[in-house]
Image 1 (cartoon, one colour):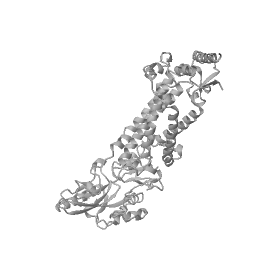
Image 2 (tube, chains in turn purple, red):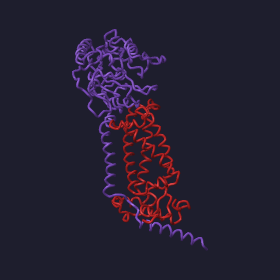
Image 3 (spheres, rainbow over the protein chains, first blue to last red):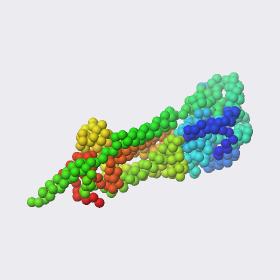
Image 4 (cartoon, rainbow over the protein chains, first blue to last red):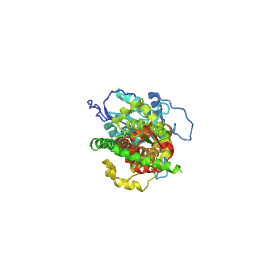
Length: 309
Length: 219
């Protein structure tokens, strides 16, 4: 996405300054994906391509309903199909629309080294500002959900924008508009949670005891949430992480190592500087030169003497 | 101070060219690497033509550095082998730090500090190279799993910081011990320099363990 600046940022990658946030009266938004109502028609995928002008290369049939096989620089959302045999021995077809979860505490943004290449708007949407992206792939390492994909053509990172351009002008995301069963809903996060609650009660009454809302708190909650029939086992849904979190390795690297390293390097340079102004240079004296010449000269006379007879 | 008319060749032309190729690469890598490490230093990417260029060029400079440093290893490994003098020198490190070298045991061509710099870099640069390959998105982005890449990033950063610290020591020591820089730019030191800092080396040279080109008239 390009930067519309229709809303203030609440977070901005690689920035030590507080982003402007005066326009604070902004509702948090969320997309709710009700997996139990999804029929796997892929209208959302088509709508995403349509609105965002994405045309991934046509691939090959690989024996799977998933088409294409993986997210990509021009595949921002993807239906994933999992066949699950439940305790009663019945087949359950678990279909999940995969894409950016728009974490409240985004790992991609934390890892990004390019100032302003990843931002979070006041409404909670996490967006990549492509012209500032340097293509390093750090966001891929930061993401707990394995979402960003780097293009080999322009070396930029891409993912779902939650149609931040549409949302900015009061429209719902393209996938929401296209969904024929109402499995994808969009609104304020509070409304979406209320709606999910009703759905969960309904699912429980129909025998899905573990039905629940997927809004993982380890990343501060997400702005894309799922209603799952098996909320106790999210990984059944094509590897949706049970407990998604920003890797401790990334937290170490972008957390305390960053300031500590600069401090360490500065301290070493300052130690050198103050050694120079207190103890000072180690200089060769005239005496040293006389001694050095003597040692060399002695050897020369010795060699000459050896040669003489 | 009397100006000696004989000088000792400490670094050959090959040594110097190889060293400075390595040095230039290292400085460029520090600048481009730090720009991608801390937001406050992102402005350094401007030196390379912007963020995309910095990201693209950093790994290639790293490849040149590794090849160049392999040359330094081949040329210098023998004189950096650790021996008993190094322990004695390290014990007198306080004397070294306050320029009281008369009370520091004599050392050969390199002292323990110089050997430390050599071996630290010999260890760190391959670590940086291989961890760097893992996170070289353009060519190896899909070669390893994401957890491996995360680990590689942390290792790369830690090794880079360690290498920068070693480099700060190396640069300061060269400035502090006067005329060391000239040894690496023009190639020679005076007999007095050798007497003061590397007395055993001078004795070895004087004892004839050198060819004719090692000691020559001042240019």
